[in-house]
Length: 70
Image (tube, rainbow, N blue to C red; front, side, top):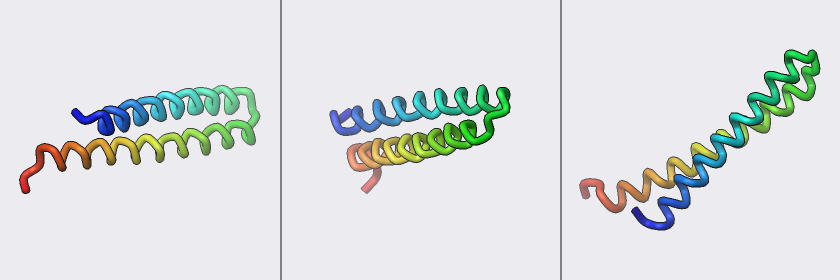
């Protein structure tokens, strides 16, 4: 695997972990009745998910370039 593909996999994992943390924060704020803070954390989690999806797609592109049928 190329170093660039490995980087994208690592970044995807990092963003998934950050998204999960923000979802947990959102859940706690909902339980506490602080819906504004919950919405903030849910929105940030969605942003991390978008970054994770981007990096996973970039890693897949590297795989296709190296191993896909041409």
